[in-house]
Length: 376
Ligand SMILES: *Cc1c(COP(=O)(O)O)cnc(C)c1O
Image (cartoon, rainbow, N blue to C red; front, side, top):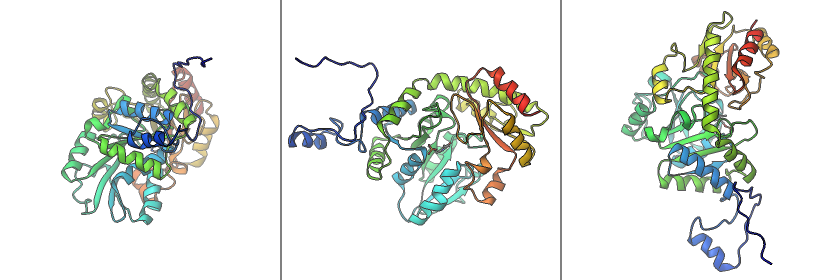
């Protein structure tokens, strides 16, 4: 008797490290016809391919690789264009892990870095060297939510012969699609909004051209950066609600930002959706009128004040990540931005009292009343 035909609506989890071949002809087919079958999950797996294709579709790319983390995605993106002797530019407002990768690890492999202050991003002449290959930046920076004009930056990079690599983790493709604005690669910590439920560590890089997508996949395979079937499956499930979640995150964050701005204990609020934000108009145009779920605010620069807020808050646990459906808070100085030099931190204003909120999708009244009692 034949086994029953199985037609699952959802891609099952192919929790296998390797795939079977009938004979030598079958393995030859694998090499002759790329994409015709699977060999080994580090090289490719139906679940990680499904995630890569879904992120690539969201970002409007020619192809993608799913990676074991956002850091692996940044590493793969940089290696797509760089080798020993090359130089990269990096926006000074950058995730601490990206700075650590550049400062501590890639530097000893012969890839040098210079940081470009936010205000100077659109005239790179003083920073470009003969060996400069690319510029790395974030659509919305972590933790101060500065918004980069990607079209303008892509024009500047093109004129200088640089590739533009954009970390779109905070904005998500719901707000902004950097490839359409001229970026060459766009990457994500899928751990954050794309997966969205604080239960996966994953990353992805999407390329504008098929050639770069091929390079990315080779780098993923050979360096062993690729993602497991289970994490891929969870990320695909999260992605299905991305549009709805980002809308809800944005709405709640707008109301939380408004509340904090009016609160006497709060010295400053950094949220692109506030009319007081220096790039508010750009953020509105580039984000389609939505501003995302991340914001930062300043308390007095005293450890006791920050600790009291963290200890009192019930709805914003101090959990140094972001973008889950449940709210959380973090202090960049002690966590995400530890790896920055003192000078970099001072320059950016990353001090004791700077608190970053990841606003979730809970009923907003519950968030506002929790903040009110925590700030008392
Ligand atoms: C978290 C984060 C990363 C790193 O991603 P992991 O999944 O933690 O490796 C990179 N960029 C940004 C903007 C992030 O927030």
